Length: 332
Image 1: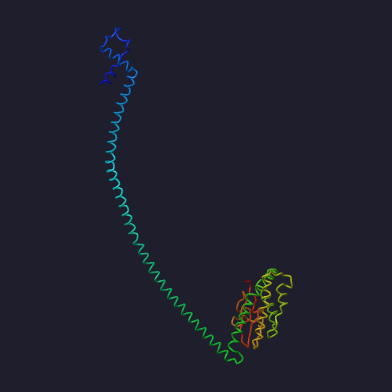
Image 2 (image 1 turned 120 degrees about the vertical axis):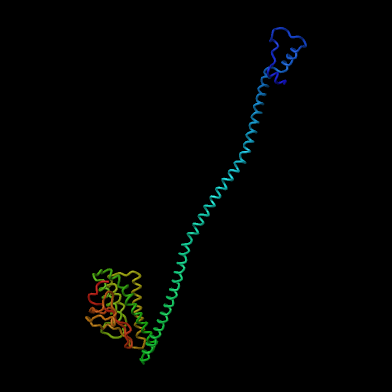
């Protein structure tokens, strides 16, 4: 009440009013004393502060009301959100269930396919076992045939008083080495000269040069028996009397061919039985695969042009047929 009264009626200055002097000791004296204690400017400041307190109180009450409203809203909103979350979970579970059903339905054809593949795999396994059995039978048959062939060879050798089984096998080994010399090393050895000459008919020219190599290493066709290889003539033919150079590889091959020919001749002569090279094929006769080995690109039944590599015979047994070149054999 004190503040409200003075707020509504702030004290007046001492010099205001009707100009009369106030009574001594009366109410006017109290106001004047009060006005002297609290100036008017301070009264105004106090009034402003009171207004601010009232506004602050109203704001606090509003904040309390807002807080109550906000406290109540989340609880209702939480119940609503829980319901929506439950709905979403239910929908997702239904989706999972649908996809699971579809997946299980798709596994049906896949299972059938898997069963089919399993059956096919089992059948293939059975066929594989059958093939393995067939291969094993074939191997046994080949082994039996090999044994029969060995028995035939033994019988043939036993019929010869001048030839033992060991000698027979030695001469077959010599014939195999001789064939490798004819068909592998000599063609490689003569290649640098063929490259330098660049002949029109490469196959025929190769056969002619290899024939000359064989004559140098295994004697002229008129001579029966095994003589010493002419290694100088071998080098002259290979290099065309020095006009064709050889690289290191072909130089080593030249030495190897000469060494192999010398070793073969020595082994044949030391076998103790008559051995010879056979050049004796009449030109012009029809090439017969039963009697002749056909050179590259040559055909059976065509006329023989010349012997490329001689056959090999030991103790009157033909162990290697002569290699022949036929007319009109063409290039390979």
